[in-house]
Image 1 (tube, one colour):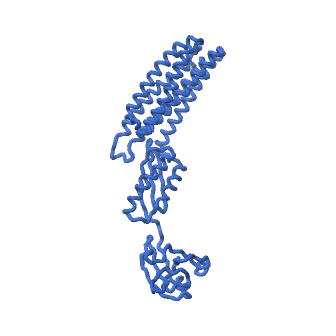
Image 2: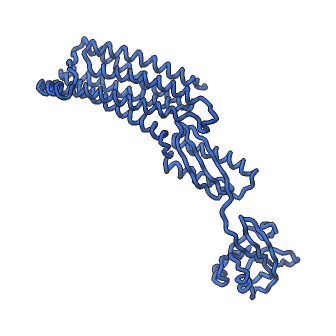
Image 3: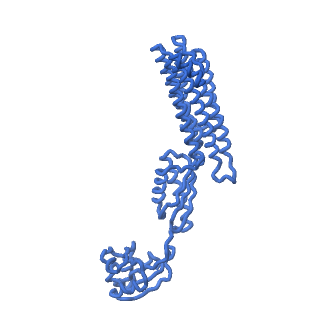
Length: 407
């Protein structure tokens, strides 16, 4: 059965509705049970609502098409990710302050010093007993289950629509479940041990997970804003993959960066293939490149590929010629079989100024040096002694026919 994909705005409106229910439930129970952990988590979910609204605005802007922005407006999502990360860092700091107040409550003198010098808020101990515990557990555990399933659904929808900001918000939603499980565990310990100050430890743990999610969102946003590369390992994999395509001599000048969730790949391909073949090569490179990126969890990409001929300095080669029994000229299999040579100038990979010279093999070494030949081509298995004898490389031709070189 095909999974239904909602619009990005519809996804975020569903998530906002879930956050609103959570905020109302946690703030009500937190006030009723005097639970600083519940109230802190309610503030956390309030910031999630603001972050979700940022995501909606970012997605609307990033979908706009403007010719003056050739790479699109996807980086706007990254700006909102940075704003969301900073907002969550503030929430984490405020939550940690309340957790510290709860811990200092154990010693009245320390609590008084903290309120006087650090301006810590006053702390009211959590109310213990079966009158309050079931409500705390009901809100925390139901919230944890809801966070896990809602976050996973949000991530799937974000990946399907190609919006990293929705995926990032989904990860943060799933992290809420860990916080809510910690709140439930803390409430159970408080009631079993009868120690209200455990609320402070739980609140600090909540602050830690909020800060962890904030730093992850900040990292992703800043990565795109400062045009950081998609990573050396991924670039190396892309280069290896591109060079497997037939006709590609080298993939060079690889430059990559993220524009929001989209990986931008700039690549120069060195190839001798003609223009018509380059069009098919480009399609092949984009297809296998996108598949390689998928292995690194990069789901959206754009390739900007340019082609260039190999830089080759003009030089001169010689092709050894031999006669078969029926008088046909072929590329000579050995030095001794050479009865003539084609002396050719090589310019940009093409043979030019081809001149045929008939000469006995005993004159071969002297004549090739006089012609300033850099390389001799034969068709048989190359004997290393030939290179030593001539003082230049001897290369094996892939075929005996002179037509392999257009002769």
